[in-house]
Image 1 (spheres, rainbow over the protein chains, first blue to last red):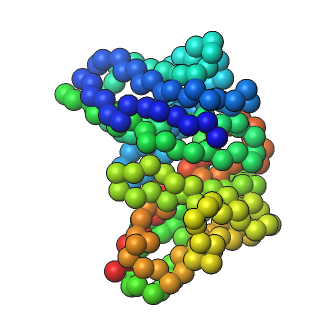
Image 2: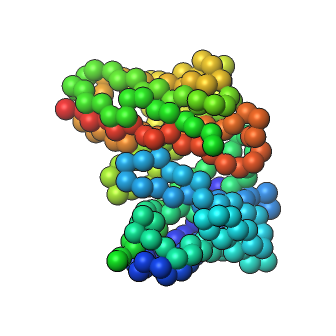
Length: 111
Length: 118
């Protein structure tokens, strides 16, 4: 399973764009990159998933360079409610997949 | 979206007793469910993988006789913490793979169950 490295914490202000980068140097060919958000005392919630280039949905964008050794989660115009821990996970997406959670990034949005 | 429900959401028990936590997929069938444990300020740690109709696969260091997992149907998996001790106090989270959409990559997580052992 590919190991991931993320910053432990980040601070931002309301209305700013936040970019959280994750390193995964030993990502395998079949691996996808998935980001989850977790609020205190809740289960993680799926944000976005990608394999290469750029993926965008209604809440975030995911940028993946050609070598796929890193990825960047971009949250546009964050609000206080975006304060949470963000996890980057790397692994294949077949039915037998096991996802290993790294340390995650604690994002704190300040007023 | 797909919903995974855990029950109870929190439980307090005395040391030495057993506690059962249920994980249900409410609007989909789950061939595979995962059980995680999370201590305060730490990340999720995978405990075991549960497949419907077969024995669970436990991660290294997780005692299968202490953490009994049953996945008797496509919508229900249970985790029983036997002879619980204060060090078992933790936040237990399950996740499920939708049998129909099992290759989409998205895992659906329950709300978590907080166990406190006195």
